[in-house]
Image (cartoon, rainbow, N blue to C red; front, side):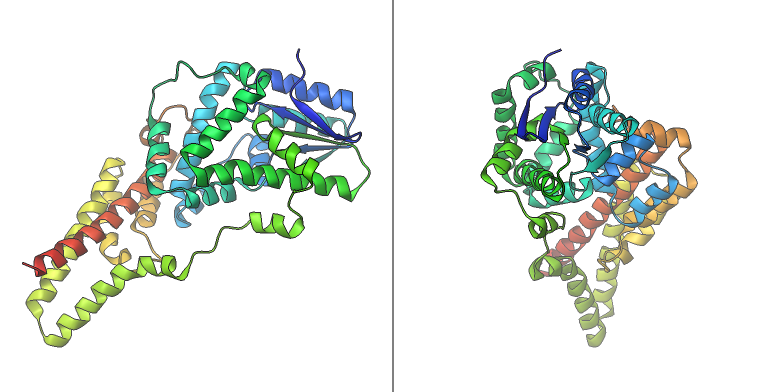
Length: 389
């Protein structure tokens, strides 16, 4: 077995790079723990991913309901799509994604070694990356994730691990495709992981073995060698979402304020005809588009009705969303079984968003919200366009 890519930060700190889907990486991690004899095994995991791997589950009914209530359905869907793509590669290699990290944790625990989680929370990383991506970049990445075409020229995992220049070029290609997302997924995490490793090194004289994705190895090494890794305060900054500016915060309220302003104006003028027209256009467009989104998601008839009834009201209040109500109704009427929840975690086909009850709850929530947003803008544009005629 060839050794994995690695570097020694010092005689007591070693960092090894692995492929999250490679069976050889699992064996290499175990071998390095035995050879290096660390006191601390630091792994590229956050608390939520650690819990997911060690408990072999990431979703239950309460968790699904929380996702719906907190409006996180699109984020969870994106995470599921990314995991599905990685899982397809992992099945080809005989391992599930994260198997080498789980091996590191289990081997360390069996030897009574300390386990340190050094990655940033996955939700924070995804949200920061999504916020940094431009609209067309989002469309392009979703299209590529949903596509079923296989790249016949894609390199094998073993080739990536042996050829670090090839791996680096692929990472740079991501940053070319989406500079914002690349900065978050690669540069920020390189810095964050380096900062966490340095903090462990400075806090004690113990031996440390850090297990990270091979794609981060060169970035981490550069930060540690040049002492450019973030300190504690900077690490805290990387753990929070960028604050929205005043204009960004005001955007969701522009349409509701405009509509309510028109209602107030027509009411003050005693213009019942225009008031009725506005009410009809607003209600019909919101109801039809929200219901259409729910129909595309193959929601329960009562979820579709809920979407149609809720959208005209929730579109006037940015703190609410029609998808939350439709998703809740879908969850209660077509409650996912334990098997549904477990199978959704193993999703390897886009069709599971429709065929799996847990996936359908997320899809109903997301597509109803999307339809409701479209309906609100169509209603406004249609009514204002009609005024000009």
